[in-house]
Length: 336
Image 1 (spheres, helix red, strand yellow):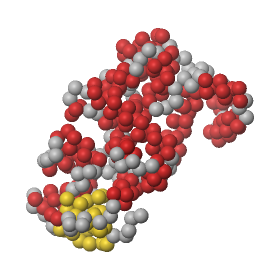
Image 2 (cartoon, one colour; image 1 turned 135 degrees about the horizontal axis):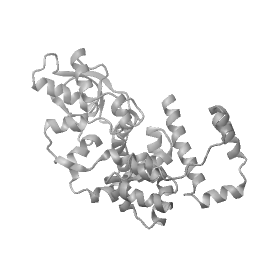
Image 3 (tube, one colour; image 1 turned 30 degrees about the vertical axis):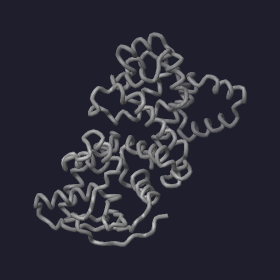
Image 4 (cartoon, helix red, strand yellow; image 1 turned 180 degrees about the horizontal axis):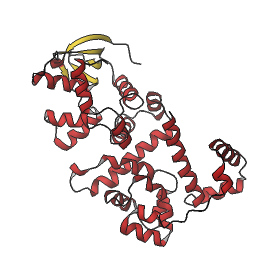
């Protein structure tokens, strides 16, 4: 449990940036243990890799200008005072780094101290809880790759049980497990085929999340390929946009579409796939009617049909259901 901290005004020169922060650590792995301030800023200010969040969320430059305009921050940073008295930033590294930069560059304003919520000698579990609440379900999300990296470390290095991780960050165990599996797959198959580690593109992570969907792995192996081939397709933009991973099973089952895919990518191959005509009554029905009809259909589905769908997880019906699930999830998310 996180014990309530105390609100204090802290000299910024006394605060250490948190090098165990996954966003910073990702940069340290590329540039070593002594990154320049510019590299730290890039690591902290890179923002989210997801295209929607890049467009809609706050950027590093916007945050910087907002702090200058307002003469300071509104939300306190969160610090941990260790047993030896030193202070490390748990949450708010970007803002602390900006204050340090303003101070060293003599930016007009008062930047020598910063508002902070100071905890005293909290343990690793409490630190994890703060990070997860703020960055996985809170207002300042990490990019998906960094989330997955942190979840993987909590599970496989800190050996936290799934139940504890889920309690910290909300959601479901299946979602946490999918992110961890996607991170492992990306590190296992994608990183080794990147010649220069600086070219390791974390924005491709969602493709490896799609790889975990039912039927995709099976379709790849049944077609005579392996997951290094999949990573190569990701690297070479054969699977672009990354949502086309969902239709990969259908592409690989179709000889002509597969040939076009290997040559020109999934977008061109998808054009060759047959799209069954939709009954006009269904086209004219409203969303509520369609949703209720699907719910009723699933509730009354004969067991033999259910078993048939399970046995053919790469079939057209299952893939159509997965496409519908993805579209519906995004639609509901957009509705808020």
